[in-house]
Image 1 (cartoon, rainbow, N blue to C red):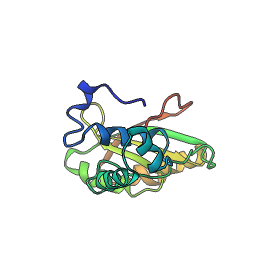
Image 2: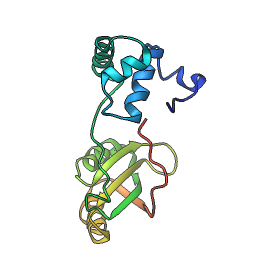
Image 3: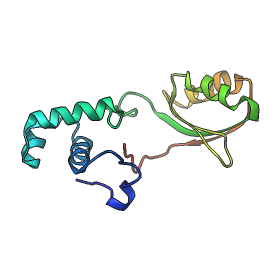
Image 4: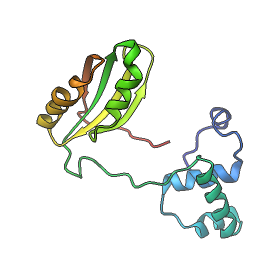
Length: 158
């Protein structure tokens, strides 16, 4: 599977063994793979895979979700937006922004921007509406810069 090399995994995988990592990699490659198939590849019982899978979920290492393709779902405008805030309002601004349906990703960062968000909109008119009627209306938003996605070349879910 396309697993990261071991030296880069050490700090990420404390408490996980090679079997756990194999299960995670198998599910990343095919989220619908049968436990029996993973068990056969590892020469263990499907019950063991089920127990490991449940533990990975319970401990927060693994979350299984359906990923949609926004472009196929009718959304034609995606953008990454860097937001600068008034320093003492950064957390309140991030909470307000995260409540918007258009926002699919939000991180608080260091550097040029205080917050980076990724938004998905129906079209450019919807993106403009999001910026003017939602984002710029939040108290504490000082400035933003938008980077419209032209083409997604690589998208990985770690």
